[in-house]
Amino acid sequence: MTLPTTLQTTVLIRTPWLTLEEQQVEVNGHMENFHVASRRDSVIAVVVTDDDRVVLIDEYKYGTKTRVTQCPGGKIDGSETPQTAIIREVYEETGFQVTKLTPLGQWHPDASWCRDTVYAFGVRVSGSGDPHREATELIETQLVEWDRAVEMAENGEIMDPYSVIAILKMDKVRIEP
Image 1 (cartoon, helix red, strand yellow):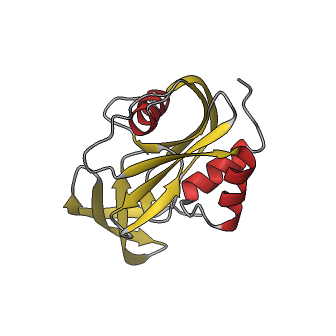
Image 2 (spheres, rainbow, N blue to C red; image 1 turned 120 degrees about the vertical axis):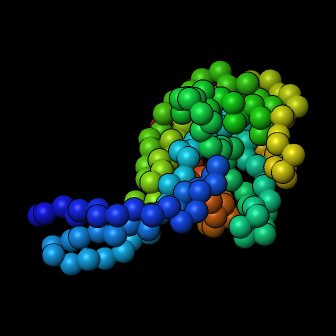
């Protein structure tokens, strides 16, 4: 198999969150234009408290103009590692301090047109505190029993695919305190 050759790349949109390119590509003697998006890598965590409850957030999403139940997470900033990013995101969104961090895996959400990686973690947390959310983050926190979180992931109450994958992976590798 001969790999495609990119002949020209034109940046159509560049923002802090997204870059959209049009690439002119030669594949097996045929010319084709592809659109490729680049987003910052992100992190997500299944957060479990000392009393074995799962911390979920209900967050308003500007794309769908709805509230979405999901696991805490967000974009990796600057030179952060995925581990430091998820510790920061859990604290900012929930106020909890991470006491144990277990990688659950990573994936490319849509490699056919987008360059980004999602890193998933299972985390144990302790205490509670005041979240330090960004002004545009409209978030409410809820605590649910473990079986209820799995049920929500399986029955569609949690529609965020990253959260569903992370919860179902975490269900296989429960993290001990």
